[in-house]
Length: 305
Image (cartoon, rainbow, N blue to C red; front, side):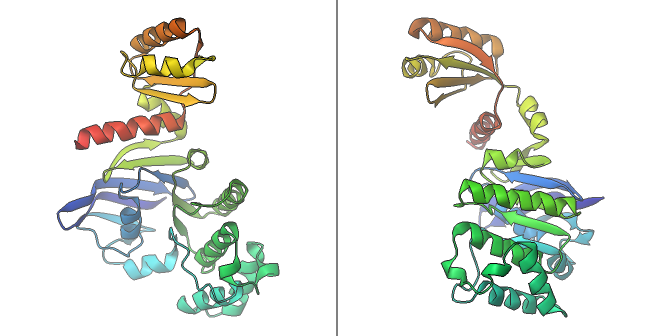
């Protein structure tokens, strides 16, 4: 069963097209990554699918509800976590959750709050003021508010921005636990390690969906080759390789240099010449997801220009 199925989705603000003929599907129980540079239209797309914005074009269904006619039903069945912490900082964790329970008109609000606190490990902190929480615990409170009404779909808009690595890993462990129980998740992120924890990823740039699939599928579909130079003179090698034949990207990583391109033969020739010139060693390597996204971003900019 498909939890999200939208076709030709478009949204304009004045003379600017923010989402441009976008088609997207997410299967039930799937954790789907939604990636792209800032200003690419991710948040606008999520808000249209949540029933918070009306599309200017396109059709679609979310949880089998029409995104134009059934917005109230979609809001009842979806948990939406925004980029910004949007709770009352002078209320406690428990008081914030009671407020949210009232918004959803939950008949068993007290039990729902207690169960949610226990489910996300917040019971011992229930009397703590929201404003005094660290980024990781604020994130956990926001997630608790999103799932308290037992939604079938979670839409998370850059939920881990500004959160330390340990808290991010714990958050993602929680997301996988929820998905294992049947919850569908669409999550936007800028972190490549988070993208790799998704079942499938969708890459959007300038309002257009330009790549989708599993991580291996997207990496393979990019058609890139990567070589690594290593040695004391990688900075000199980088200077020699910029603009060289077959070289699309040059990226230093400590004492190594990643060189990426679409034409494998030309890339290897240029990389070998730079390695010989600078005394660096050279070996082939797997192309990373980050390399693919940098490439996709550059191609999208060229197309837009």
